[in-house]
Amino acid sequence: MQLELKRFNIPPGNKIFLRAINWTEFEQILEELGEHRSARIAYDNHVLEIMTPLPEHESNKEIIGDLIKALLEELDVEFYALGSTTFKNQLMEQGIEPDSCFYIENEAKVRGKDRLDLTIDPPPDLAIEIDVTSRTHPEIYASLGVPELWRFELGKLQINLLENNHYREVDFSPNFPNLPLKKVIPQYLKQVKTEGRNKTMKAFRNWAKHL
Image (cartoon, rainbow, N blue to C red; front, side, top):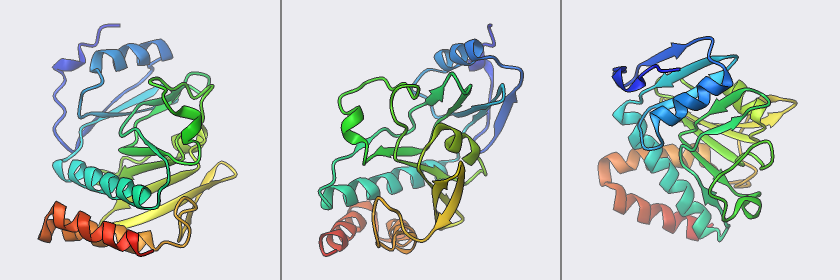
């Protein structure tokens, strides 16, 4: 299948849908798109969605990811951050690329692995979606068995836990018990825009140190 996807021009914040795409074609498209790209994909029921994020989306993704890494470091919790890695399961014919994701509880099970196969390896413990363009696909994450999904939308953080194959919104993350992250993460994300990244990260680490 030769789609010559590089000839497609997808403006930031927009998406295209390719229908009747089988698994082999999906794999070929991923290879053609390459790993070093800004576009994100979602694949379900033989429909492939390709979305190009807005600059705001990328900025929020990086800062939230940095905050989570800093928090895990200050809590002295081992983790494996994989950014927007493609997670896919051929048996389910589904695939997704979170904006950020973390192995925390299952970090030791994937430590040192360069390639992950969700038919063998566990899914990430935490996936994060920056929902600037209403892209989130909770049903795909649920099918892949991702236990915790965060959505950041309109300045608010939503924490969702997987229960009976569906996500339920909760106030606290089990990966960060009793921490008011729904309030704290948006607060420091907003602070970056007024005080700068370095000053904000130092303030955040100081907050984490005194937990």
